[in-house]
Amino acid sequence: MHITLIAGARPNFMKIAPIIDEIKEAKARGENIDFSLVHTGQHYDKKLSQDFFDELNIPHPEVNLNVGSGSHAKQTAAIMIAFEDYLYSIKTDIVIVVGDINSTMAATLVAKKLNVKVAHVEAGIRSFDLSMPEEINRMVTDAICDYFFVTSRVAIENLKNSGIKDEQIFFVGNTMIDTLLKNINNFTKPPIYDQLNLKKGNYIVSTLHRPSNVDDPQKLSALLQAIGSLEEIVVFPCHPRTKTKLESIPDLPDNLKLIEPLSYLKFMYLVKNAYAVITDSGGITEETTVLNIPCMTLRENTERPETVNLGTNELLGTNPESISLYYKKLKNGDWKKGGIPELWDGKTSKRIIDKLIEII
Ligand code: UD1
Image (cartoon, rainbow, N blue to C red; front, side, top):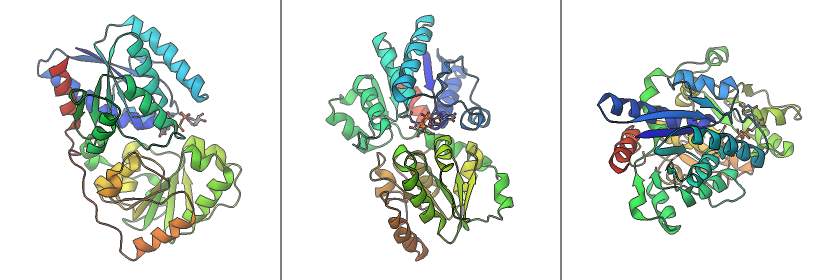
């Protein structure tokens, strides 16, 4: 079995790393299995891409499609054109796509039109918010792919409601948590930790990058003022999209420490030792749930309801005023105690590869 794995942007890299490790283990056991890795080049900055390959021991991709930035249509089209050429040049039994980025959807469309089977890892999650590009990517991908590996029971229901058959759906858990548990003893202290005299539990980590929060400078400014008014130092690793917008915002609070994006092991060190996290990321809400760190999500909805129903995450909406309300709750010691979602146990990639060996 030859597997072609697609990765394009930062949140993909920690999802594919343990799958690759598992393919290698299966091969070492004598299974007839091999893979090639395609990097679409959607993220190209060293800090958003190569650093993750280095730290997570991801092999050099067979090919980098180098599509770079652009509007959604241009980026999606560039990935489709370049990936079609690549797929013509090799023989593969199945394409694995992960997550919900433009690369996920573009590669799925190309493979299916060439009659190649596609498996989607992290299938079936839904925010039901079509203003998010990721929601469109999820829906299109799940409308046409063949095998659905899901992180939660809610995802199973979402897929069944859209007509996917039981036998195509596999509840396996979360590969991002495989990576977290595999690396938890190797998280590394970033230089900023001592520079700012950070100590376990005396600072907050924050990230924002969703267009709905960062593209309007007034909105971004109001959110950052609210985040920067809390008692603790707030460390804010800046996504390139956010950084560009910050240039037009004067007078950010002193408490808010803007830094460059961090590599995986350094970012996770910061999160693991933080008092709390304030974010609009989806993946971080899963990581804080497993690490039992209070997380405030600045969004109106989430495609990962288990992080709220069971985990440490609360959905605050995007009104800056809600930050102080939830912060009071945290300060009063009233934050809920979290639990860990079913099958988020570090063995998800093994379940995926075992299943693929069985079906292909
Ligand atoms: C993408 C994903 C999103 C994911 C996020 C994590 C889509 C639709 N979105 O959003 O799901 O949560 O990654 O980071 O696929 N840029 C750089 N250097 C880079 C990459 C991007 O400077 O290496 C700039 C681009 O020029 C662009 C902006 O950052 O202006 C946004 O990049 P883009 O790839 O369009 O999407 P993200 O916002 O990163």
